[in-house]
Amino acid sequence: MTRQRLFNALKIAVSLGLIAFILTRVGLAETWNALRGAHWGFIVIAFTLFVLTLPLRALRWQALLGGLGVHVPVARLTGLYFVGTFFNIFLPTGFGGDVIRAVELTQDSHHGAEAIGTVFVDRLTGLLVLFVIALAALPFSYRLVETEVATAIVILALGGVVGGWLLLQGDLLGRIGRRLSFLPAQNKLEKLYRAVGGCGRRALAWALVISVLFNLANILVNYLIALALDVHLSPWYFFAFVPIISFSLTLPISLGGLGVREGTYLLLFGQAGVMPEQALALSLTYYAITVVTGLLGGLLYAIEGARGLKSEK
Image (cartoon, rainbow, N blue to C red):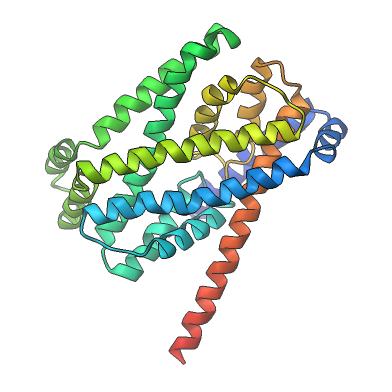
């Protein structure tokens, strides 16, 4: 077995192990009752809002590409976000779909460094804003959770803000790159450093503004799902918890975030007094929305492939 296959097998084992552990701690019948009794009007609104965030994120990506002089229609970038959501279902972490987006855009535009660099900055600005939102919400929500949870949110968010800011410094990446001059393909790496740090302040400002709108929409999606399941909590819980949940999905320890997502929902919302079966239902409903959206992306990807084959004949 190759190292990559072993690594993937380990992730499958972790995903299944986490799911099995969660299922032993949560009543399946109670979880099914929570899902079965959901108010579908709220879920339809949450799904629609989630889908609408994809063209919004495409506008963010377009702004970053434009800062590097690469112009791609927002419709194409929206399609790539749908495709990326499809691959996120079964690829490791939330970055799996990002790799596919970068590869597809490279084939379209032949700007490989720019595609990879802007996908990285696109993701980074989203995470950066998430951490800022968590910090901004904490003064209004720290009394709602235990001290240990509030402290963990502060440490994680502050670390994310500082780390994200450092990574966006093009000069810093360039200096690190020069110290790693022994690496192969150094010219390509230098193009990548320039792409990460060369989008320009205006493009980064637009990306950060759009990231605020997207992350607020994502928090609202979770809040609507909670209402659909008759989970009535202060909105401040969602401002504090959703950023941490979103960050947990970037950890490369499971496939598509399975197990990690559910465990994080249980841990955090359990602090708010939500019953385990309700917290699990929250997680599963959000996951179902991403899966349905991803399946639309998979269909789009198949149609594009069929058109490509037809054009080659």
